[in-house]
Amino acid sequence: MKTVARITLKPGDMLGEDVISYHGEKLYSAGTKLDSKAIARLARHNIMAVTIMEAVDFAETHTERVKLSEGFKQFSRIYYECLPHFRAIIDSVVKVRIAPDLKQLMGIYVKLTSQAKNGDVLLDYLRNITPDMENMLYEHQLNCGLIAAVFASWQGMTNEETLKLIQCGFLYDIGKLLLPSDLFYKAGKLTDEEFAQMKTHTTLGFDLLTEVGMGGPIALSALQHHEKGDGSGYPQKLDVSQIDEYAQYCAIVDAYEAMSAPKTYRYPLNTFEIISNFEKDSGKYNKFKLNSILLNIGKSQLGLHAKLSNGQEGEVILINPVHISRPMVKDVNGELIDMANLPPDVEIYALF
Image (tube, rainbow, N blue to C red; front, side, top):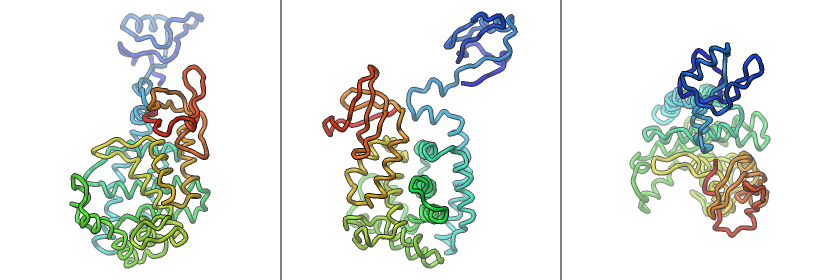
C-alpha cells in the first residue's frame, strides 16, 4: 500500500485504509474501488491524501509479492548493471591469465547486498532473477558469492573468514569457462564421455587459479567442491576429513544455487523441496555445516502459507530441527499439522 495525494487518484484505484472525514464520518471503507463520483466526494470533504492498494497487495504467492516489490525491482536493475562488470573480471582471469581484482569483486558484492535488508531477503531476490542463457555461468558464479555471504553470516564467521568464503564463492566454478560451451547448453543428458569432460572443470579451475596466484582455499574450493563427505565425489574421492573447509561450504552453496535458481526449463524448487533434497543426500556434506545452514533456511520460511501434497494447507509456524523439511503447520481452523507424523510422500509443494 502507498499514500498518495487525492488529486492523483484515478477511477479504479482501491482504498487500502478507511477514509475518515475531518468530522469523524467514515466516507469509504478499506477495499472500496473508487470511481469519479467517489473521488469528487473526497474533494468536497477536503481529503488531501489517501492510502491505496498496489499491485503487490494483490499478489497471491510469496514469489509474486517478491517480484512485484520495489525492493526486488531495484535489486534486479542493479544486478544487471553489475553482471557485465563481474563477467569482465572473470574473463580477465580466463582469457588474459591475470589475477582477479578482488577489490572490484567486493565492490560488486557491497553494491548488491546493500539492496537487501538481510540474508533471507537476498536469497529471495536471487531466486527470482530471470535467467540469461548467454550469461548463465557468470550468473551462477555471481549468485554463489552472494549466497556464500549469507551462509557465512549464519555460521558466525569472522570478517576475514567471510571475505575469503565470498571470494571462493565467486571463483570456485571458473574452470567451467575453460570447457566447450556446448556442454552447458546441450538439450538432454550428457554422454559418459561428455560428463567425464565436464568433471575436469575442477582441475582446470584449480590449475588456472594457482597459475594467477590465487592458491590456498580459493584454488582448493575449485578443485574440491564436488568431493563428497562419503568419498563418492570427484576428482580425488576424498572423505570429509580431507576436504578443505571452504570447499565444504562451496559444495553446499553450489547445490543450493543449482536448486534455487530459476532455469529456462523449470521454476526454482521451493525451499522445503531444497531442504528435503539436502537431507536425502546429507552424507555427502559436512553434516554440522549443512544442518546449521538448513535450519536457518527453514526458519526464513516461518509465517508463509504452505500447501501440502495431500491437500492440507496452513501457516508454517515451527521448524523441526531433526527433520527440517517437515515443519509444524497450523491450518485455517487452528489445528496443528505435524509433518513429521505424516507419510514421507506427503511434502510441501507450494509456499504463499
